[in-house]
Length: 392
Image 1 (cartoon, one colour):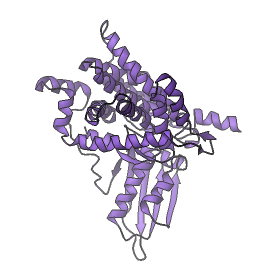
Image 2: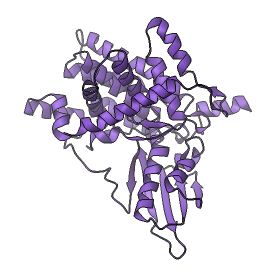
Image 3: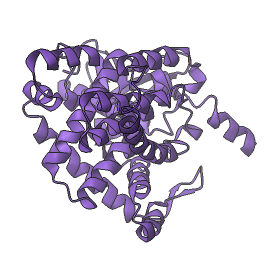
């Protein structure tokens, strides 16, 4: 498996697949061919279908910092392809054939981005458990022995998470005119003070900042960024935990996110929202269970439930914006993550779980492959279609 640090990328919202990945590709191309005076960019799949709502065109222009960028689209090709060709006054440079893989990860046929490099020999959670048993080490020791500098990266991610929520809590007004959506995180925060119940407000703050194109941290994607971000902010600000402890929680969460990434998908355009919110819920549930002192079996149980009860969840953003139903789903998911940790702890005393984490990941992969393309981040069906009918 690849490095856990790749699950936590920093970049502009609102979508890791549709803004962070294209931005990375464009910047790498510009660095490789700095003399370009113009660019031709081809987009396919959901990159083409939701280019406006996800801000893909604007972020590519920002990365290239060039007034002469032309775009073409193929809305029938299901793959998230991005091709880019640069020109100067006398020469046409190499065309890069690229894929956006989810969570900001990219593949470029003509260039090694470093995303595919393997760090862990184990390929699923069962193999990880066998390794832990054979070496007599903990899950946390396993992670840090493979990625000794991981905490330094995660502390940078935590800084972005804190800044994201802070800004989201203190910004008001219209977020999106097409949806007539006004920010509500600040109002939720004021209401939360009455009951000392802040997680929803923090989740909304992060997701509203993401939808506005702010600087974000994938966890493991931007479509699901409000889940672990709200948890980290809550534990830091309300529970007064230090960053070293929170890095440990993100590392534990990352193991489970990595297993999903390796054996299924964390991309809404590939697996539906189950791949984004479901994975993030599993990661948060595992972190919470670990925080509460659970053993490895109970942590796995909590993570398994985090995915199990999101199986089949579609990715059907209204008008292609990462707002409806995405923001609300993040808030639901962080609450469900706590429920999963609680249930796993209680149920483990009276029964074993029949479904392993690896099994539910395989089920997610199967289900994602069965979902219609209209329900995988294309905005062609589901809630997006219902919204269109209601407006017309």
